[in-house]
Length: 172
Image 1 (cartoon, one colour):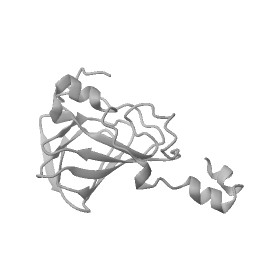
Image 2 (cartoon, helix red, strand yellow):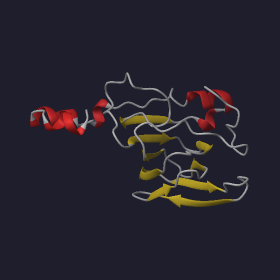
Image 3 (tube, one colour):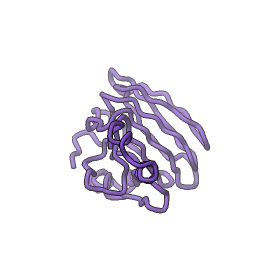
Image 4 (tube, helix red, strand yellow):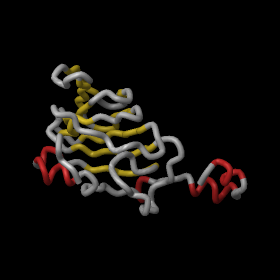
């Protein structure tokens, strides 16, 4: 629904159409399952969509997610020891907000990817990664990490995997 459409909708319908309740969400382990299938279970993680589908693929037919106008919002569950491989969103910034567990976030040098800087985030910590900066994630704790993922576009371009990423050359 666009802003113009919402101006002409009864308020009760409007507010109901803007809610994505937790109990209607599900952990989608298949969206990024191609990575675990290609490189092992350490790359297994689940996406829980709320607004839009992020850059993970086409989930336009999923009636449970709210349509995106300007950004996408999802949760990610990263099991103990699991990795979100190095990749780059060239067109959008991305933010991570930790809800549970411990998340290690690494940014990689844009030139060759071998120089890195790493920070460990915990409950209610947030990091924003600018567009064009390669990044990776790792669950550094002893429980699953659950965190919000906000991507700054209605439908981001698919990310790329630089040569230093374990996913370089892997496709769906």
